[in-house]
Amino acid sequence: MKRRKAIGIAPAKKRLIDALAKFTCASPPSAVHPTAAALCRLAGVSRNTLYRDHPEIAERIRRLRLRSGRRYMARTRRLTTLRTELGSLRAQLAKLAALTDHYHAAAEELRSQLAHRERELAALRERARPIAVHRASTKEGLTGAPAERS
Image 1 (cartoon, rainbow, N blue to C red):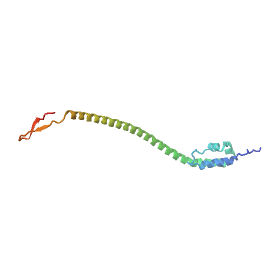
Image 2: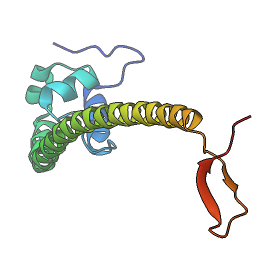
Image 3: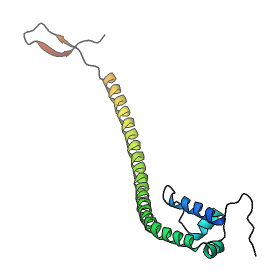
Image 4: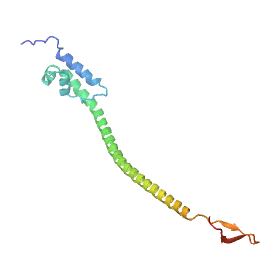
């Protein structure tokens, strides 16, 4: 039984090789984990066709997966580390926000107390005007008698 080629459709091998090239030249390397299923999906070919008609491409994807597996694991460890650090930083951020709120409220309270004290001092100064002392023409100099207020 002869297979018919559809007009305008590239042969399966070419599509598989092009899809494999996308995996190997991807930047960042293998953003999609290279699997036979992903390769076949990208090429528009069934997995049966890959394994039956193109075992050399299946072998290349297996080697690529092994090679990128190490990078994938290293990347996964790095992501885990970064996620842990991010969680820690978020917790610290929450604590810093609480401290900022606390210190802001304390500063506002101190400003309020300072304004109240300044008003009290102004009232005391207003009530306690200095008493003028007059100079007597005696030898002693100043007398303790207050001058008359006008």
